[in-house]
Length: 90
Image (cartoon, rainbow, N blue to C red; front, side, top):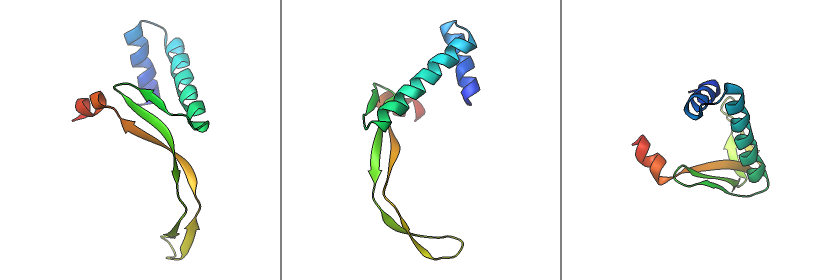
């Protein structure tokens, strides 16, 4: 499912235009992004939890040359699915 498909489905389910559904989707994605960039956790009960996690620095290997490289520490977004989502997928 693409973003366009998701917008069309949401518009159909809510009985609104695709433009309004797209505006809501953009707002939700921006809100989640802003919260994660501030270090906050976003929990959607039954769906899952988004949070920013710190990934430690480590040694890696360049797959083309085999040369060892240092991979710096970074912060990455993580998602943990909720119980209802896990049950729906299984």
